[in-house]
Image (cartoon, rainbow, N blue to C red):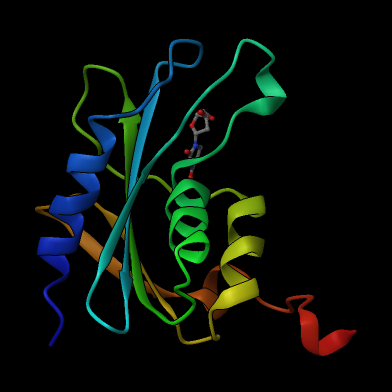
Length: 134
Ligand code: THU
């Protein structure tokens, strides 16, 4: 049984690096590969707001750019600056990026280190448009 509490703790560590001076909403993500490696990501904002990237995509793009494509689970932790993270659902764009690389039963863990729930990609993004449709 994978230690999802550990993965949530890693996401929490990633959140500490969040660069979010505009929204003051800090997010961290920890992506576990099938080979057991963990890639961390945080949200990185920009004065030109649309150049902002979410924590989930930072983690996924780091991993893919290092040659990793087989993923086991993704833990996400987010909340307002200065507050304990409670629950942060991934945005639609990140769900679509996850769907590019991960199967329907891919596990997405939401909540925080002490209280979290395991979701599947299929539950968060049903009726997905993927490469199989092209
Ligand atoms: N954000 C993420 O990093 N991940 C999410 O799942 C939701 C939103 C970021 C983007 C932006 O920097 C801030 O949170 C507020 O939207």
